[in-house]
Amino acid sequence: MRFTQRMSRVAVSQTAAVVAKAARLKATGAKVVDFGAGEPDFPTPANVKRAAVQALEQDFTKYTPTGGIPELKKAIVERHARDFGSNYAPEECLVTVGGKQAVFEAIVATVERDDEVILPVPYWVSYLDIIRYAGGNAVLLQTREEEDFAVRAIDIERLITPKTRMIIIDSPNNPTGAVVPPEEMEEILVLAERHNLWLMSDECYCHFIYDGGKPFSLGISKNRENLLVVGSLSKTYAMTGWRIGFALGSTELLAQMLSLQSHSTSNASSITQKAAVEALNGPQDSVATMLAEYNRRRVRIIAGLRSIPGIRCSLPKGAFYVYPNVAAYLDGEGLADTNALADRLLDEAALALVPGPAFGTSQHVRISYATSQEQIDEGLQRLKAFFARQERITLPGRKTRHGATPDF
Ligand SMILES: Cc1ncc(COP(=O)(O)O)c(C=O)c1O
Image 1 (tube, protein in one colour):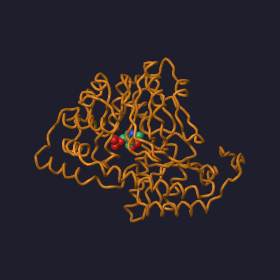
Image 2 (tube, rainbow, N blue to C red):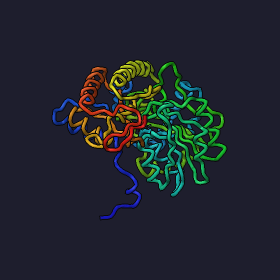
Image 3 (cartoon, rainbow, N blue to C red):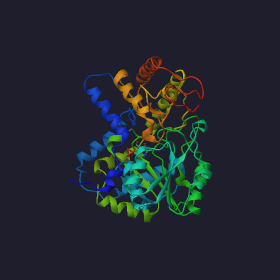
Image 4 (cartoon, rainbow, N blue to C red):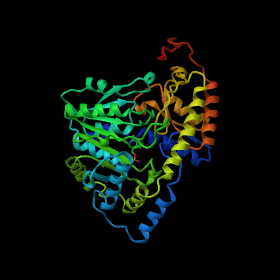
């Protein structure tokens, strides 16, 4: 049987593959420490669950308008206005099946064959495959670990060509936790306007900001014709399985996205939409509680990783990931690359993490610290013990016997 050419341009998400492999191991009874999954370990807040039960009891179980129930659109724009000071109208909001559907629809609606999309590296794995699926080419903006993976408007501008259609910014970033400062974000939006490009600002982690930084949305900008903000309740309210996200943007772009949605999923689940209204309108203290706990875990995991000889790790300012550099242990043989490292960690130490190639870099692994402090401590012990058993390349620039040169 034949499959389409466009399917040859996508593969199952590598993060999902790690999660699946870890789940298989867990099913055999192994005590896996899971640093792989990019989702909160907290339960969905009780008031949100109650709202879903109520929706069921009230038989709110039928199709809804494709783009979401009016009550939810209102709740989204009002929460956004309260949290960030934006002034979106409900017509400028589309409710989607997770933020991922918004990303997918936006790219498919705006990117043609051979169009270019500027994508900073490291990137969230799905952008790349969706761009390819749409027929476009990702133009990768390399960032530097020494600069905490900073993304700057000036570097983006150098990559703009007549074929550029879109710029994607993901801040706080998955996988690095890096945050693009608000002033820089504004400059990137000005750039998008000047060159008539779409700017997709993925703000799925916008509430997870540390070290006194304030949650920020580019949606507060005055000129936002070229801007699409993507948001999600998945991480903010520990609702990954409920599948609810949203897009805020021009009514023209949203109409295109809605059109696609009407032929694919139709509306997001009616029950979930009611629960989302409660999440957004109800008490917000669970968000602050989770943030405080993530911060404690972040400090713990950074300290633990930095105490392992040869491991470098920049301090993430947001989200719930760290992205350590493990080049000192990649010897081109037993640990040829980070894929081999992730495999061996799972097989030999029952520890799951995601290798960097999923995010476009070769010397890093992504660790999600959205897991308990006990699991973090246990995982760090296993990492320490595993690396202690490996040969390490210690001198900067020294070639290994296999010719690989660590880049520090
Ligand atoms: C950067 C980023 N954007 C979007 C999403 C989509 O999340 P969801 O579809 O659960 O809202 C994720 C999920 O991991 C993500 O990391």
